[in-house]
Image (tube, rainbow, N blue to C red):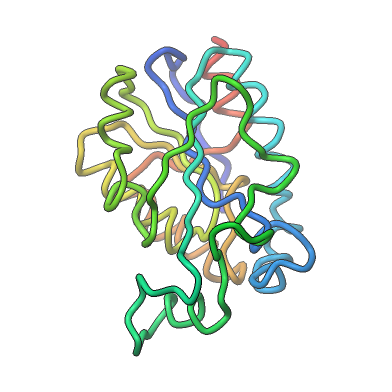
Length: 209
């Protein structure tokens, strides 16, 4: 992936960092989906980069918003004959509410002043939540996205944010897919249509300029 262009300054009071599914199922050894993403996480150093960026954005006054996913016991929200990505979630009993796997990983737990968007039971962070309302209540114009999976929930949320009129930035070094091929394909061929692909370092510079 090519190096990102320098960004124009971003007003922290008009910017939100959206953190998609930094939960143990993905981030942590023993998580039901960790093995699927651990190689890409290591290659991009995404967790460490995310921790560093989140702190820098907090310090700059950027709104930090967490977007976990969760399901009831037995995943009754998902069809009895699911297919695609949700089939794996249901069959693996992943992200069951109240279980360790659905909890935020230690490194990315919300702190006082952060906002946790509740109700996400699908791919898009906007679809079954009040995310759009919260963004508009906080006068947010710029949305910065990182998390899991690059070409699933991050992409779905990115597309809706773009259609809803936000200026969207996606983080090459703070996302993970299940393969580097999938990661690179998303950023090289799709993300530039609906966002400004960039890095955590460029966002740090932009919100402190």
